[in-house]
Length: 179
Image 1 (cartoon, rainbow, N blue to C red):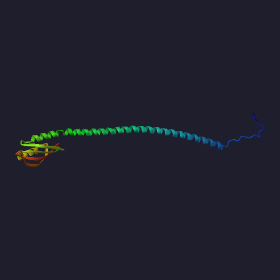
Image 2: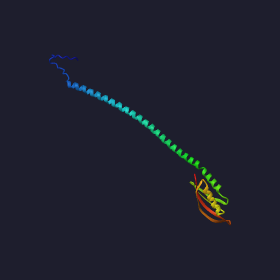
Image 3: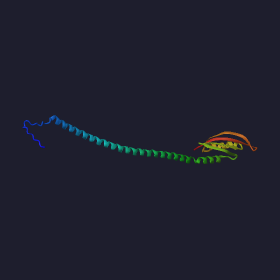
Image 4: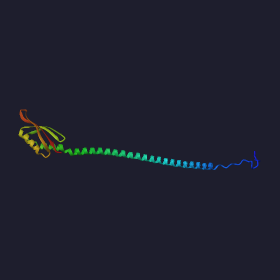
């Protein structure tokens, strides 16, 4: 159906123009929405960049922590190795001490004196034995005092005993061996 307005132009409804405030307000609103939308996109992109950077840093942190653990493990292994090595070196250094001790004691042992007990602990040596005469025992003590490997010789005890109808002197002595 077709409609025709037959009213004269004076009586016809006039279209009123939009008020200027409304037009300006609409433009301002659209501009604000666009600016806020752009700012939101900018902040969203910035947040995504920061999250990606955080993920990279966390990955790097995990790598560094793994490296730190490897270094700590290496240090523990190295310390254990050095401890074992120092024990081996100490043993190697001290392995000649028993040999030197026995060699020195037996080389200085005069005829008529014999040993029944020898104990070495930390460089301190305790010996017990018998001698046929007191001068032989005194000679042994003097021989030990003159040794370059033996120091602080002390005769602890000397007493006369009879073994199978033979009079002997039982003695106890201590000294230190130089390391």
